[in-house]
Image (cartoon, rainbow, N blue to C red; front, side, top):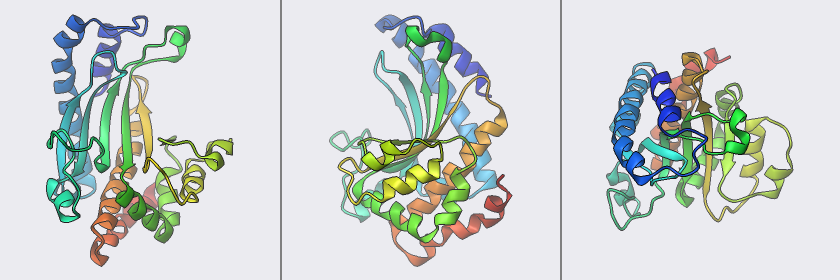
Length: 254
């Protein structure tokens, strides 16, 4: 499913080339966008069949192409519908709103990424990033409330799939931790009252050598986080209980 598009990334944008010509980029970007859209839609259908349709009913799907010579090539994301921003007095995000912020508050995304580091060529390969991300002050507060209420459930969701944790701003307590426990990093991050960027993400990189099980082990937990966090952002009791709908699946996680 994902092997074809990743092999083409390496063929067309090889790691041995630092700068891609505008001609090469323009000739191929539409194909990569189309393939990512098809791949993402197939994965979204799997998520919809196994989880809930609600995330897709409450969200807008957007396909974004990145600028020439960026490492990300294109991205397919889910973010709240425009009515969400209007309800809470926030500007609708770009690109739907040309004058809006690029940050969406929260999102789930598939991003196709090339690598361009020849000095580490043996360690690099194209990958598909599957990511849950918070990108807003209001959404950060909502997620931290979710974490406080359901610590053990979130721990089970993210502890067994080799996820990566990223913050846009550095935090001393997170940087000092040398372990690989992603949930520990999340808890350390949550100890910080303020985050100037109000941004963190949990992600997994899928390569040509990854299996479909690797994909699903990221897809299901991160889609659950997206749906449950959106419920907390909506700030109604019924919406905050969304996580309980996934008890059966979460209990089956290894």
